[in-house]
Amino acid sequence: MNISGRSRRKFLMAALTTAGTAVFPSVAHAQVFPSRAIKLICPWGAGGSADNIMRAMAASAGKTLGGSIIVENKPGAAGTLGAIELANAQPDGYTLSQLSLAVFRVPHMQKVQFDPLKDFTYIICIAGNVFGLVVRADSPIKSIQDLVRDAKLSPGRFAYGSNGIGTTAHLAMEQFAERAGIKLLHIPYKGDAEGLQAVLGGHVMSYSGSSTWGAHVDAGSVRLLATYGSKRSKRWANVATLTELGYDTISDSPMGFGGPKGMDPVITKRLHDAFKVSLEDPVVLALLDRYDAPVIYLNSADYTKFAQDTFAAEKATIDRLGLGVKGG
Image 1 (cartoon, one colour):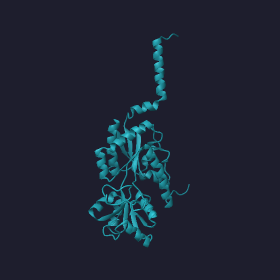
Image 2 (image 1 turned 180 degrees about the horizontal axis):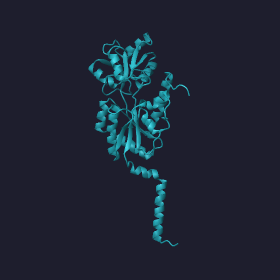
Image 3 (image 1 turned 90 degrees about the vertical axis):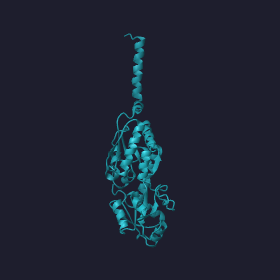
Image 4 (image 1 turned 135 degrees about the horizontal axis):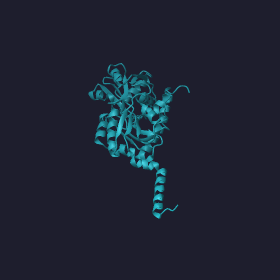
């Protein structure tokens, strides 16, 4: 069969194009990403601080990507339902989730359907939370030093409340107690609102929690003794951190965005870059300030290392407190 020179060239070009597409499908996919809406799972209820922040970031990052990011709320299971979905999703960049500290903690406390070290692509860490310890305004405990002194005189007598066993507010206080060489009495409540009312009513000596106590601090009904972050909070800049006071305790409760394992590095970088740009958006920054959520930026590599280090650190604390998974 005779084939003309022109036909032969057309045949070879078509064959090369087909071969190129077969060899580099991920490159072709990355070039058109996103070609449809991206789902970003918020593992908390609608209307809360995390939900509002995520919706603002999704809108901002979507503009950078030239597509849309749709936030879907999946509250429950201690904030791990998004992680569970990622473990079973396609690694095409169209299913993402917020990953909170619970993702690194809960697997040590109960059986879960994901492995934080194997099942996720860590894209970017974006922000944290302000946690601190408050006492009623008329409390004789005026400072952390007073608390430590009192606790050493009467081990196990000084009581603090938190929003539950195994929460950030609980574990941070136990870490502080270990560093200070003291024993405290933990009183778990169903939530911050109940715990704060217990402090205001004089039913518990102090309360460890997120900045839901902020309005009471500003109103002068409670005193903020210390915060737990890696740096002082913007809103209460006159209050020292536990680490500044000599008790190496840091709990920013960082949160970020991740996808399923095996994502194309090109798509991961596109998503990272878009969310990083959103951290400069005035609308996003205003919301972060409103909810006392400091920017805690980590790129993909640093966020992956943070995940590994945090998973190990959470296990050590949980095991020490006897809260680990029992049995096989």
